[in-house]
Length: 452
Ligand SMILES: Cc1cc2nc3c(=O)[nH]c(=O)nc-3n(C[C@H](O)[C@H](O)[C@H](O)COP(=O)(O)OP(=O)(O)OC[C@H]3O[C@@H](n4cnc5c(N)ncnc54)[C@H](O)[C@@H]3O)c2cc1C
Ligand SMILES: *[C@@H]1O[C@H](CO)[C@@H](O)[C@H](O)[C@H]1NC(C)=O
Ligand SMILES: *[C@@H]1O[C@H](CO)[C@@H](O)[C@H](O)[C@H]1NC(C)=O
Ligand SMILES: *[C@@H]1O[C@H](CO)[C@@H](O)[C@H](O)[C@H]1NC(C)=O
Ligand SMILES: CC(=O)N[C@H]1CO[C@H](CO)[C@@H](O)[C@@H]1O
Image 1 (tube, rainbow, N blue to C red):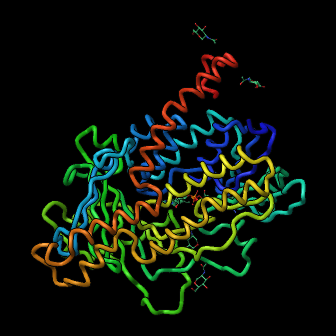
Image 2 (cartoon, rainbow, N blue to C red):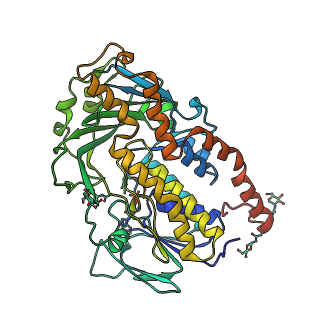
Image 3 (cartoon, rainbow, N blue to C red):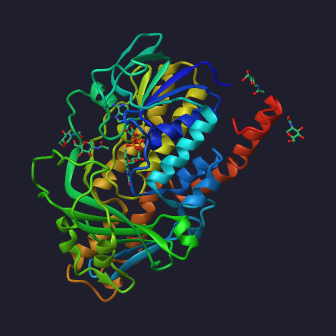
């Protein structure tokens, strides 16, 4: 059993920070404190994907039913070139033979669902309007300092906290990371901008299909994310338009300023997609019918050699911000949470435990970063575009079937959601949550409350 008195501070109440809190709590740690810069945790964002490997983690935390009530079981992924010529498709999730689904979900709804679970299970442990600013550490403990972003002149309720462990789960612009790597600077810009929107409409293809169309410098992605709309025979479609706006060889890597909540006029990109009318989906129509569109620069950071420094480590986007390619950024943050929690369960020496966690998670996420820079699984689109820029009758004339399959297979293995290993873990961990619930009820008679 882990030491239940071990105290843990988590910086950032995003997807990574919340799942980490739930996973630590599941593992028996109870002294957990989350500090979040925003004044209020609001349901911001658009679509996000949870690969089967990450859905499994959430199942084992008793959250699968909720996820399925909110998100969509993605069934297939279909690739097209910019003319709508069909490149390749693959079954996804349960349809592909996984024992657990892939789930496409609204990021805000996923965040809400996790937040509710944290409040219910851990109680009042989230401190909003606490922006982490600095830390000090000794052999015995680590102290974090906070400011109030909404009013920098008034100190926050808790100006500082001293605990056994400090986890930086503060996202792509992590302050924790910037203190560890003071010369790193802002994330590197890929030269491509993304525009995201969500719109309810009639279903396309199976109603549970993801579509990826175009090539590396001009791409359009669309997939449904909402179960509630599906039950009414509609689709809540999340879409992403991508365009290169800065030359590939431009040495300037500083990202243009943008943020997740900011909306922009559609004229910035809609013209480039005006001819993208495919038989099953009119992209100009989808863009036109969407009310709110937000803009983001596609950024990442070059992997560093170390995340863990004594009693402090990084997790999620703070540790490994990735290009949003291959639909697995949130899934990697969730896999980090499990690895960190189990390292702390197995090893009581904290610096050693944190280094073990780093050794499990840093090498694979670094590989994903480089794979995503080389287009990840979308490489098939790039191949099709380069070999047949004016389109084609049949993909067989352009790319051999073995080559097509290999791209997808290799990526899944790299990202940790190859079917064999996921299905093995599904079996091995069957009933984990139910056993946890039973042990609690029997041991403590907390019958009638949901406080696990
Ligand atoms: C508002 C928002 C909307 C997003 N929408 C999408 C989306 O639609 N689709 C998609 O694929 N990805 C989206 N992402 C990114 C996605 O959530 C992450 O890529 C992924 O889930 C990994 O999560 P994370 O917890 O590591 O980082 P994040 O989810 O980015 O969470 C980091 C958290 O840390 C907080 N924080 C930052 N600095 C400090 C500080 N100094 N002190 C305290 N707290 C701090 C942030 O406010 C945030 O809540 C969004 C992120 C954010 C913050
Ligand atoms: C991170 O910083 C960049 C600018 O450096 C900004 O465009 C981006 O929106 C920021 N991301 C988040 C999640 O705050
Ligand atoms: C950006 O790229 C440069 C050149 O490859 C690299 O030296 C630097 O570390 C990168 N910065 C980040 C934030 O990854
Ligand atoms: C839980 O509640 C039920 C009735 O609500 C009762 O029959 C049962 O004995 C209770 N169990 C415990 C462990 O308190
Ligand atoms: C078996 C078990 O989980 N017992 C716990 C019941 O709750 C008390 C107080 O919260 C704990 O100290 C026990 O360990």
